[in-house]
Length: 545
Ligand SMILES: Cc1cc2nc3c(=O)[nH]c(=O)nc-3n(C[C@H](O)[C@H](O)[C@H](O)COP(=O)(O)OP(=O)(O)OC[C@H]3O[C@@H](n4cnc5c(N)ncnc54)[C@H](O)[C@@H]3O)c2cc1C
Image 1 (cartoon, rainbow, N blue to C red):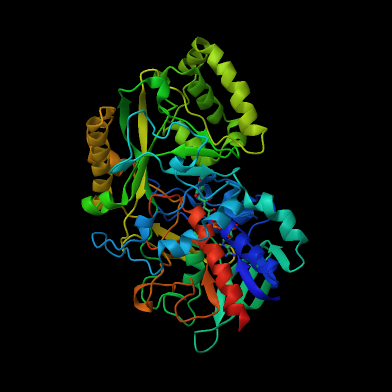
Image 2 (image 1 turned 45 degrees about the vertical axis):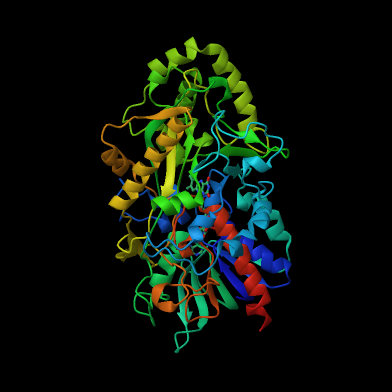
């Protein structure tokens, strides 16, 4: 098969690159390992037994092999990286990006258009229709901010949303059920001669084009490069010995509750909506200068519900949600396995009776919730992303989501055994460090001081041993960052600033694996911003030659 460009992987990154290039007049082949619908046979190709379940989710929970990729099961939260992430931060080693924030920020509006999440405005102060600008009254923006926003997409499942456009575009050939197993190079080892791909029935296909874009997701892209090791020790892109290293996700969890002393009814604990009806959510964050002054990693916090599995919350709504999400019959139709696992809270037995009592005691609000939320979540096209319950006592758990700092010992590598197509399985070794833990604890200390300084409340710690609690909750797998890191020069990374594998001018990566740092943001919005930038570069430079 031949085209101008071959894009491997049809998640958000692959679909955006493919459609952008095809719409600019180029012939594109979009190759996807999975099918139009979910199939266990394809999904199994990405499975590996080599990971520690205490710190990493199973690949079957954190990826999806089908057209649309993992966006088929994602939550839809859209958050860009911050200017801080691209700053020089000598206090965080190996954190230097070869591109600036401005170079990426100019793609944010186009990214919003792809996600269908409205305007690229992430500051509540610039959204006139929302009148209360701070999370609680009298809490100004200063070293701590509460004006920064996340936006929510439909949630936009890229396969479903863009399939018609993919199928109707004559310049795109979508080939599904075909898994790329090796990138082949010429004798110089600096030019790709083709990509070898196989069907589940082991039929072999060689794909050829002028340029190749790997968009297989953070870990599978790295795996494919590592497995292409005929001419390159450790795989294509391993010239610096860094392929697979610096694996990062995020550090998240709860160690405290925010107890506000302000009027309870004026606490913004749930979603706002802008004039276009897009769901927005506020978060506690820090000013850029404050981060630098305190040498603090990037981290945010947002107000959350009490743990829904614990009936002590007394809320009929939360109890109803718990019973539904943990139901063996309906649970799987309501939310992804990851969300259902969180709802179970690690308990081995499902609690039923006390939750039913909560629902009976709280019947009017439970019934109102069922009809109102049910419609907004399951019938309307723009789905409400979740629900939050009001706290009369004005106390809310604070959920943190922070940067995991670059660490070359945190890595993935190839195991000896292979999947059914002969591709070696991944060994995953995601490692947090004491510095990640310290960042979380200090952030809480600063949030607490700020609330007290403005007489708005304070933080109440849930955990008695903060260090132990943050360590225990540190786990990811859903955001797969850093294993093909970007660098100015080949000796310190895998790809250059145009996402080309160093030494190649026909092999590119569209994935969060190229990110140098993990920031506080969930990755997908910035993945798409980079995918748009790559499409522009391919169109205006590579395919012009
Ligand atoms: C439960 C859950 C909730 C999430 N919620 C959010 C959220 O709210 N916000 C956010 O920003 N992120 C979220 N994420 C993460 C988000 O889904 C990913 O960041 C995003 O999908 C990555 O896009 P991608 O295109 O890089 O890769 P993917 O979406 O993973 O797509 C990669 C594609 O490549 C294909 N592929 C892999 N290997 C090969 C091969 N060898 N040959 C051919 N094809 C191949 C795969 O089948 C897949 O279709 C969530 C993830 C999960 C699991």
